[in-house]
Image 1 (cartoon, one colour):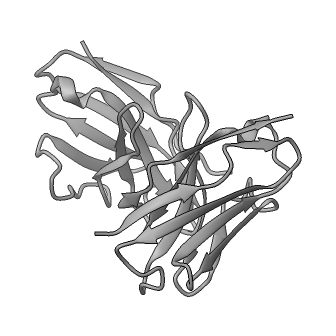
Image 2 (image 1 turned 180 degrees about the horizontal axis):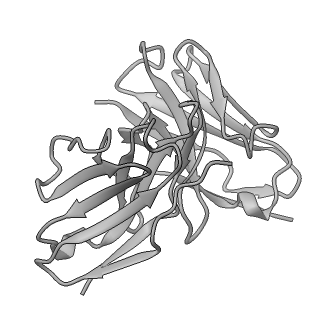
Amino acid sequence: SYELTQPPSVSVSPGQTARITCSGDAMPKQYAYWYQQKPGQAPVVVIYKDSGRPSGIPERFSGSSSGTTVTLTISGVQAEDEADYYCQSADSSGIYQVFGGGTKLTVL
Amino acid sequence: QVQLQESGPGLVKTSQTLSLTCTVSGGSISSHNTYWSWIRQPPGKGLEWIGYIYYSGSTYYNPSLKSRVTISVDTSKNQFSLKLSSVTAADTAVYYCARDWPPGIWGQGTMVTVSS
């Protein structure tokens, strides 16, 4: 079955830049999405179609794609950004959806 | 605005069928070009796509669950439902219903525990 690989954890100090990667063989063919999930809450999309930012999401959130890897970048990290982040994409058929294992972002 | 609310038993016995319903308010479940989705999250673990049903009635399921999953729509009640058969402890999770893909609107989630 298709898998997306994320680092389990990333730690940064406030004001620094956090980068979270997600790798998958079908990434060149399929869009990726990034979700933020805070404890006890449902996930929220922070990046769509690799690099789009939904309305209401701060400009410090950005996404990029290169080959089989997509990256979520949070510039000028704030304490409120501490959360779990999940990438999500589809397999090469575009039908079956997959989530990455999630990355816990810790703001030191 | 559209809101979703999951409902169903919080405890299901091993080997039985888990049944959940998602009630849609503030909009029609028959909306064109809309996916109605189920996602789950075991305690302390990551998200897992279970499947979705398109407004046309077509269904798509996670291959790892396909043999046990059924998603259906009841337009008369503006609801869609999830059935997962032959459950085990590994199916213990918070179950979310959601609209569209990627999901833009989520229910609050409902915890389902599978135990003998």
